[in-house]
Image (cartoon, rainbow, N blue to C red):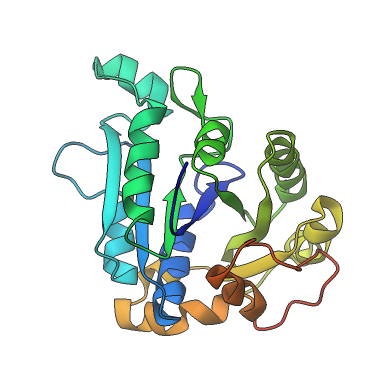
Length: 250
C-alpha cells in the first residue's frame, strides 16, 4: 500500500485484554509528542446503529477526531459470523485498505485496532493478519497480565512472524494494583519467551480516568524509546527483548 504516514496495528492475544484503552493511550501519547494521529476500526461488533463503539472511547479519552469505522454488526460475535447472522455485507479487504490509505495520507501515525486476536475472521477468509499485511503495519500485541498470558502471547507472536508481520512490542493492557505471583513472573517472562520487548504497561482502570488525566498520564505508560521510534521507520527500531525498558511504570 502506498502511504505517507506510518501504520501500527493494535491486536490482542484474545478479547477483553485492553486493546481499546491501549489504542487510546497510544493515540494520546503520540498526539502529545506532536504527531498527527488517525484511528481505524475495521470491524465493530456488539453495538447497534447510532450507539457508541470502541472509537467513541478512543475519541473521548485521547481527543482524536479523525476516526474511521469500516463495518458494524449488532451482535457481540466474530465479525464474519455477526455479519452473516445479521444479513449484512461482510467486511472486504479493499474497504479497509482504502480507509487506512486515506488516514495515512493526512497523518503521521495511523493506528488500526483489530477485533479479538490475530486469527479472528473479520470477513470471509479475512483475518487481522491479512489486514496488517495489506496495510504494511507493524503489530503491537496487547496481552493480559495473569495466568495463561505466556502461552497466548507466544502463539500470537509466532503467528505474526509466520505472516511476515513485525511484532513491534508487547503491552500489558491492565496491570492490577496488587499483582499476584503469576502476574509478577509474567512481567519478566513475556519478553524472554516471545523475543519481543514489553513496551507498555497500562494500569487497571485507566479507561475510567477523566480525559485530561488520561492524556496527561498516557505517555508514562510506554517506554520512552518506543515512543521515540514512532517518528521513524522501522517501528521496533533497535529495541530487543533483552534491552532494559525505561519509563514504563508497572
